[in-house]
Image (spheres, rainbow, N blue to C red):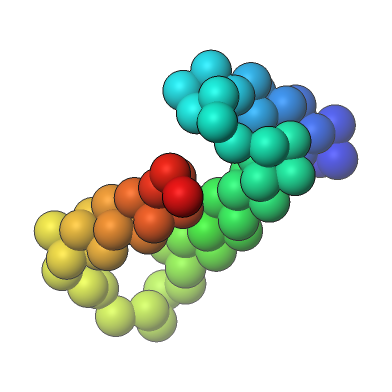
Length: 74
């Protein structure tokens, strides 16, 4: 599991460096960790049988807004 996590972060870092060359190594590392946390939390929430369903379009819009902020050039 640790190895898979490392590989996912490495691939995420590689893609982020490619599409956002203006980001520093530290910014990329933080962004990859943040995305991993969002992904793991979303996966966990999907497994909860008691979790109420939310409007998927609204969630998609929120995720887009968050990623736009995360990758906005400063």
